[in-house]
Image: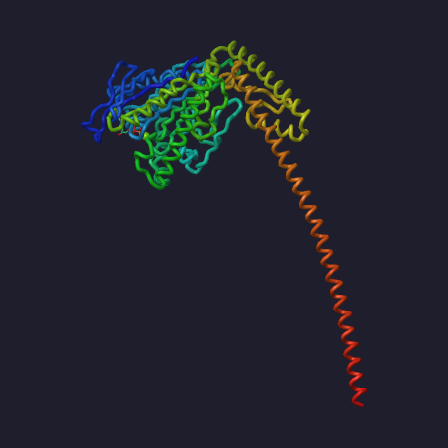
Length: 502
Ligand code: ADP
Ligand code: MG
């Protein structure tokens, strides 16, 4: 079991902090202590600490190099930078400039590009590689395509064999390093255009760079692929400190919400390893949903906590470092980190996957069979469809659908851990559906009763109306009789008066 690689990086003091006290004391390359403004001291240990004098190349070599090399061999990897605005996240990712040639300042992205093309250019003729690049940002809970600004609400979807996907996001095929940098430059420029349109700052959105490396080995039936995802998170500073108002406050709240969702996912992942609880709130924000594979165990993950070394920023730095310390406890599932490099491996894993799929199918059928005994066919079919839609089922059990055939799936899962998780999620989903159905039935009964009462009331009303109508008719008759009576009386009186007078 490998855990997430968590590192901390302190940038040099900037011009605003010039002359300020430094709040960190180095112990070694993994540990240090930090003092906050109240003079409280905290000790932290990470996989590696990059101090103010660290070099971009060292950060790349420790944090990203292994991930990039594995991605060439079809293992997914994610690198995340976290920290308050101005702490050095974008400097680490992009460098002073994405086209920066200076080796001292060159960031992770151009180095990722260099290593990817070095690796694939030196791999021999038997293997063909294709690299594609996507770039999106999450702003106010909307995912925008940075290669096509008209796509401003990209949906995040989960594919049964490809995992989390950005549905419809532009993927630009990259043929060489120079072209990759130009494409990245275009995406970054579009980010700036978006910022002005939205009146937002780059630190107010999360930026995601996604390289997909497709590997096609001659004499092997399948094409495998690996991803390197780099995430430059929005600034994590607290709202109170920035004194934000209006739109800026709204942005800050959305960022805080997504970063707390990230924190909650991390907590749930850490506690689930002890409590075996399976619910991880990945769906609470676009960011956590997008990082589901990275954090949930299907990919290798490196987190860099970027901090200022100055005393005035020490409380923000402590909260950044605490976040990193929590993340350190996540253990990645080794089952998802598989290197597929031989034909035998592929065949063996294919057999394992097909056996697992058979088990999944059987369990699904058994659950649906049990449900059929209790519920009507239509409802059970709906549940079946729901299973398929939620990705809990590989294919509708009523149809003999094909199982997973993509090689990515070989990377994605095949151990019993996943089986038990799948079964538990099925059970949970079934239980939820059964509860919903029972609830709907209860509501139906109540509505029927209310309908009955209304019908009764209607009946009574109709009777009352009938009675009133009858009374009115009677009254009318009475008036008529009285009118006739009066008429007769009046004419008699008149005749009498005439008689008397004559
Ligand atoms: P963030 O993306 O976290 O908001 P930036 O990466 O934009 O912060 O960094 C803020 C400023 O500090 C930039 O001007 C950047 O060049 C500088 N900076 C950050 N980290 C370093 C570093 N390690 N060495 C030199 N300058 C740095
Ligand atoms: Mg930035």
